[in-house]
Length: 378
Image 1 (cartoon, rainbow, N blue to C red):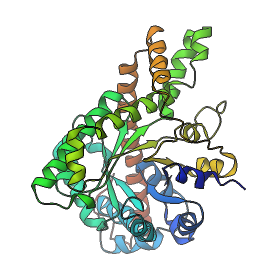
Image 2: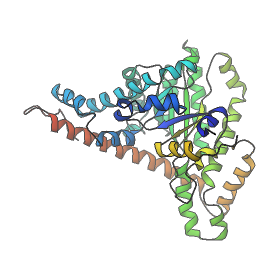
Image 3: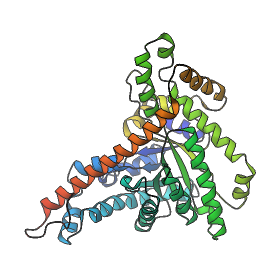
Image 4: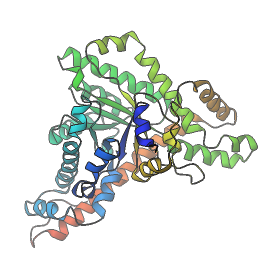
């Protein structure tokens, strides 16, 4: 019988799970996924943690201990989230060792409220890296204008980075430039480049959601024919840009010094429109040296009925360019769309972070001994 997840791996796609919770760890489900279902990495974000904290009682004991110590809300959030990431990193450490550090990675995101402050983003990245204290951790830094210098500086210090919230080809090229700058600085500082890993998280489904909305307003035959094509075209052209960078002399010099390629990671791969196949953003983005991080329902869908036919990215660059040209001809402003999506992405994660803080504040207040409330509130 065909194993679609194994097929992805065979074609060079690393299967990561876009989910993390104490339940996933305590029940042994993450270990099962790693040993039986080809899952070789984990990504998390503020929304995932807010959801995990809001359900069940698996965090009660830890929060009670934190409340007894008078921990602040921010300190409690840091403790809870980094404990989950550290535990997941330990579960995936055999994968990290078996792949010589390629996979077995677990990502945790800096406070999204800092997305437009380079210095604070870098300080938060350093704190997370020290606190998790695992070689297979990755710190997620948003690809905002202010985030890019933080990416370079973190890599220069030997911190492995997952650059997140990438929507446009222009910004992706800037991300790759920041990566090269960081590795060159790390080499100059004497760091072992082979220990520094990075992925570039290129968001997929949200592009279709926004552009399809605009195509529906146009309501022409041409507009209808382009629905569901923008996200894949955007991602395929991103892979073309990736190939161009790894073909440069600048990259080859770093590779000869032991540097690892910054792999494209397809994020936001859960289908938002039920009219589309639920495996669309997985089976249509198969290319060597990529990562696809999937929410649990998408992972299950691919395992159940995904059809992996081989490379579905290379050789389709001209077709992808034609899609973006056709959208432009209809008056769809691609730069405006991607700028909007970045802005909304930061805002959504900041809202989720606020939800997380409120949830933890409420739990700390609930379990606190009389007269020992948490030090600050949200």
